[in-house]
Length: 404
Image (cartoon, rainbow, N blue to C red):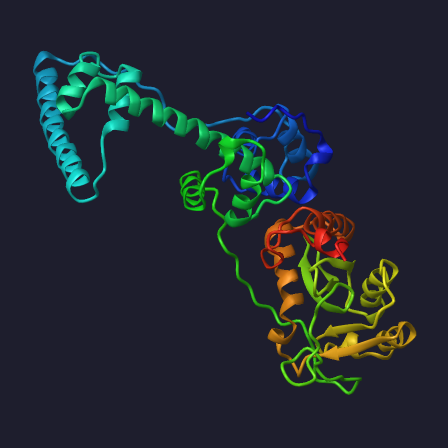
């Protein structure tokens, strides 16, 4: 079994804290349910997050509940009334018994469900005093040895399920929307044998625990490509002159995406290596001025390790075609490549990275620009160093980038 690991406030990302606060304030769960569901340590940890980041008043420790109506003391029933009440209860019990007998029959004949688990629960909880294992085995036409062996297998399976759920919650503390296939890869490479299960069973466990990640889809057009500034051909487009990407720092793709906050909308400029999928440069800014977008490219150039020829690919946005951005290309010897008009599929890799950050990490609205920058910095760090990438054969971008 996995040993207990004590966590501190630094182990929980800001995006995760805001997501928990948002769910509690929406009424989707209480703060105690949030602690149990996500495995948050500390009795007052979630309450401290609510007081620090919440929009409601969480300073008061007491709550007032008002009930309508007045209390009326009921009078004892007469014998005639009691008999009538018992007759009604008996009639309802007969209908209820017929209903459940029909349900059991349909479960056995139409769905092939067994009642062994339910009967085991009844015996363990002693909800039916006269029901014993001997009688159950006689009713179900099976031996007691087979009954106990089945109960033991079910208990081991349940313990394994709970162990897997706890491990999944621990992995999703920093990556709340980590997919099931990536979870299966991470669990398969853990030293704990109990966590090694099949992919389909992991899907079933997460579906039953309501831990599957629902897809989010959104479409927003933020690029203005009809202008008079510099435009360059698409060097990555299929054809005889297509550039084949074979190593890191050969092709960088860039894009701008929006990030709504509680006050206004800020923007995130990203520069991603096309081979390793690593985000090599990023900057969060409050306007679409070119000088802000240039900062992401300059940050990427400062972390560059090689001096080989480099292609910069982007859409035909006004910022990328401007004189200021093109002067940075000329200064560092970058070759410019652009999409043909507004075609997001020709810059699909950059769009995909935008989607990963916004749908898997940036799940809650930050309060302001400063908080947005902190959230993006944490998300980029986790994406580069911890998130397994399907197109990289479940390796992280840092692993692939540093291998060359």
